[in-house]
Image (cartoon, rainbow, N blue to C red; front, side, top):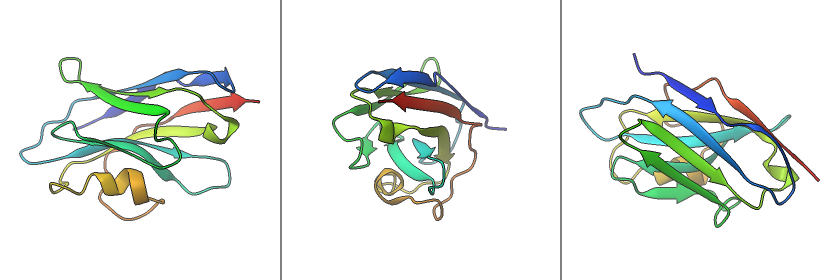
Length: 133
């Protein structure tokens, strides 16, 4: 059974940085997409950054240029480096994967996902990020 586990959340001041980690053992026969999602209080869940099986990253417009998604295939870990953070980045951050994503579809998750659609399963339990002004 595939499991995802996030860590690295915490509190940071505006302009600061955090790095999130997601340990994920993915064994699929085809393509997959894995990414970071967040949900702020009272808002729908949204895509932040995603990466396909070839390591191609995609980002939402709100984090482009500030956040970087990467992965360590040896450690089976996905990372999200968050720089120049603002209070608008405050949210619960989740790691999730689509284990059957066709080629060329991964970017949809970071650019357009808004709480429904796609085939995201499994999800991690989430890690809380709070950015103070």
